[in-house]
Image (cartoon, rainbow, N blue to C red; front, side, top):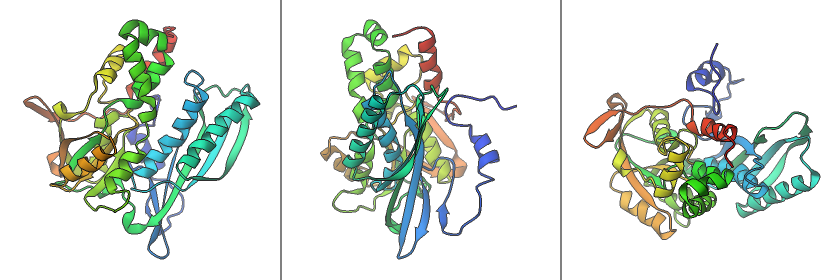
Length: 352
């Protein structure tokens, strides 16, 4: 029997159990479920295409209702943004705890509405109910949809050998922010108020929507961005690995170039996790044409978004490699993100 791990299901189980059973085959589905791919793409008439992405909806009392609503909307929006487009429509399925008050629901939903309006997203439907025994930090699931010209819909499968790999912002943004907000007393007492406060300030950097849209060009569409992949479970290195596999490429990544900020490094150390391999929503992996790195980085800098070149994509037979100082080895890929175990272990220890 397969051991059940916290977080996303393991790659092998996904490929053997789900990927082989995806319903009726329709020819207009040009990108269906796939490892390392953020969106599905369906061909539409008149050279248009529809991209969709689904994710769980967060409801984390220790974090707050506004913060939970932010994660619910923007973690899905990050996926759609990898296409180079804003989401347009949303469906929400809410399975709320039976004890969740009407007043709290109104507050939570008002923030969902607010964040959707900020993105110009219309909420087109879904389902809402209260469930006895529902006590998890997941309140259901949602789907975001966008429609655009087929030629302007990017996926992580587009990357090619020779592309440079860029990373926006830093590693471990979302995990560090949520841990700092969820265990404020422990973080303050152990690491100091400044680290705690700066960790909390990272929270509203967990949107990578502006990263993606700025990279491809807000006013003028640039063709030097070839593919993008949102950083979620597995962190920056996991996301690079997934993009390489999705596009049928190898990769060479320079560990010393990975953007690990002091704040995230300290928080991750406290919770015994590696910032390179932990949930990092807010960062975007961008594959760009060789020679265009400077232009893309400058576009992002104009929007006050840091961006770093960390490696390049190779032919698949060269493997996916991580260079640490003078030693180069095969980059590991971890099926389970360490964040979940660390979060619940801290709760068991009574960390506040």
